[in-house]
Amino acid sequence: MDVTKGTTTVALVGKDGVVLAADKRASMGYAVAHKNARKIFQVSGLAGATGAGSVGDIQNFVNLLRVESNLYSIKTNQDLTVKSLATLASRILFSHRYYPYFALFIIGGYDERPVAFSLDPLGGMNEDNFIASGSGMQVAYGLLEDQYKEGMTVKELQKLAARCINAATQRDLATGDGISMAVITKDGYRELTKKEIEEVL
Amino acid sequence: MAFRPRGIGYDMAITVFSPDGSLYQVNYASEAVKRGATALGVKCEEGIVLAVDKRIPSKLVQPESFEKIFQVDTHIGTAASGMIADARQLVERARLEAQIHRLTYDEDISVALLCKKIGDLMQMHTQYGGLRPFGASLIIAGVNDEPELFVTDPSGGYLGWKASAIGSGRTSAQDVFEAEFRDDITMDESIVLALKALKPSVEALVKGNIEMALIKDRKFKKMSDDEVKKYIDQLRE
View 1 (spheres, one colour):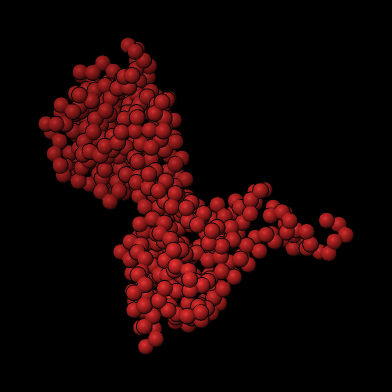
View 2 (view 1 turned 135 degrees about the horizontal axis):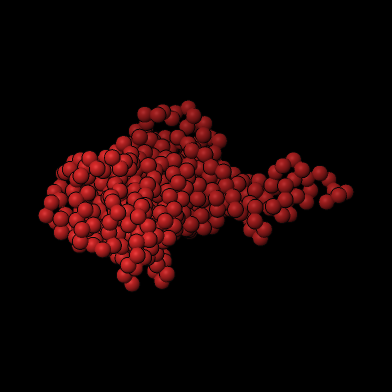
């Protein structure tokens, strides 16, 4: 099972927020199936997710997380923390142990501080300051291991994230067709416009 | 049910309303609670005080062999009145729900959510065939961000309280609370107030007859008989 097929996504934790970034290519073997694929999703007010792998599995899984998050808010009058959301995601993935979601996820957001969690298809969950996943993850990690430092600002991280996706675009077949990016700070989730991303580059 | 006096026969099945809109079996279950030993809870800034009258039936009984205050999770406890066997089933469920929540979300369950879950279970037992309502009420209390105290009843309804009592001594205890409870009450004062509220309905306010627990610094802890005695003596002074 090679779920790292296609896609490069990164999540970077900074001083004041989390940056999620991904490419826009959806591949099907050696064909480019879609050139403007959405791989970053808002899950709740202060939480977002990226997905790499089967598009159907990613979309349905994210919808499930949104439903669970909304139900939790309505039942308890408070928002699900990002840590709890990731734990829940891990539980759902593990419960599909023998019929798994073919995808790698990163859940990032803002609790009392910015946080990010990587999730593998069987529910493995790890918190980290910088996470890359998808077929271009090695390329992205090469850059991150050298360039990422703790305490970077969202502005600096946006640039680093864009460079990661760019590098993967150059050296990974299944990554390309542009960059999408979202930033989560204590004020909320925001996706960058095309123009903003061009400015970052 | 024709040719019968009004209201007769409507207590045979729990799912059948009487013409005046009540479910008699649920009312009878509430009656079981009203006859139970008094249980009460006080909420203060530092946490929660729970106290129950153990109502030991004979001096031959080992008082420590049974309990009416139960720990549900590290930060939540409950005091029961009515049919304690029924209450234990609710407590078992509450403990399970608390652990399910921890496993699912990696966080402590909130007292309000736990209370809602127990309320749902109790309600289910007033609507489905083949079941009977729980003949018990629970005071469910704990501390998440701040102390919270709820009281459930056999219909599945629940209310949040600053201080409340259930069981046979409810009225007399509630009178004491209404006269003496303050929002800025300390935990030490709350313990004495709890004993004072319990006093009119217990046979003797003595060591071994009263079971108490505190939830302080987000931790549930039973009080030892000696600790309880210390506060009983304080009340006597």
